[in-house]
Image (cartoon, rainbow, N blue to C red; front, top):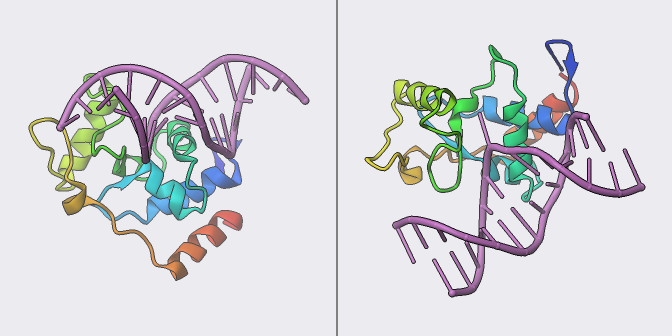
Length: 125
DNA sequence: ATAATGACTGGGG
DNA sequence: ACCCCAGCCATTA
């Protein structure tokens, strides 16, 4: 529940738990995570949660991209470049326009039982 | 309590 | 298919 002495909110914890379930080589959408947590319109907040992650966390933040299949961070800058490298190292393929085929690499999500476990985990780590 | 802040989205043009 | 924009919403200051 604590990251670098910083207490995070329940919603942020739920986001982190959900993202931890995305397997290597797969990607999820900000909106997809938001819907999974029962807050379908909190996509921006999901981005904010990942934004506030400390470096060195065990959350595979790189596996979350936008609904267009592209990396939201500026891919010309260091952050976006790192995200792309990390994903490619997991086998994720980018087309010539920097897009990921969500049909191929999109995470199918959790079943209901796992979803409840995620929510529960976030509540009581 | 109020206002600002994003690693977002869906729809319209 | 691409660009623009209004709507969104948990967190911060």
